[in-house]
Image (cartoon, rainbow, N blue to C red; front, side, top):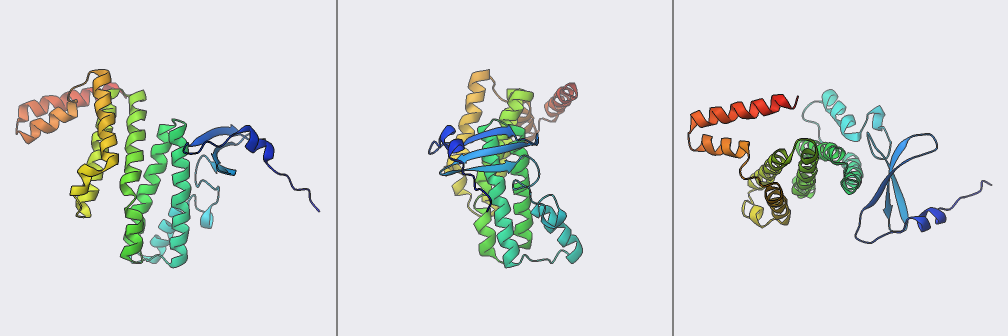
Length: 247
């Protein structure tokens, strides 16, 4: 009978802290980089690319990719079965677990990548959902995923492109959250959303810390709204010049 190995030593050397996301990147004996997250009474190990559990459903990189291929074969009227819905939920959970690890490790670009996967997958399941109840069981989390994506994109741009770019990422994220609430006819919930408030606080802290007033894009939007087209053209030229300078 094969000898079983416990993980007491690993768990003892990496204590679990309730309420905190404890994650680390390590390399195994085969040289492969993996992501680990400490959970109560155990450890999760996730692959850093592709599907977090390393599976390749139907030979595809992710279950989302596998379903996209099915739609190409079966046509746009494809509807998810009960088993397929369950597999979708598994992949949503896995990408959520990896996303919060990337955020904890300040791997912001990787967090954006995983959030984009989940958002695109949500668009897909909404289009091919078997019923409205199952659709809304996922759509209720869209603002939360958008919050994670916006936060990560802003902090990544802060490091790479500066505070104005970070503020613009927040503005774009807030617009996407607002569009969601308009779409579900719950506009009044936007102003009361705690995640919206937190993004607003992050934006204001960036303005205060870096002494930034309105960004070029904000000034451009105001000029267009006020029909100040000459000023808008100058601002567009300045935005284009700055963008070219970053290439």
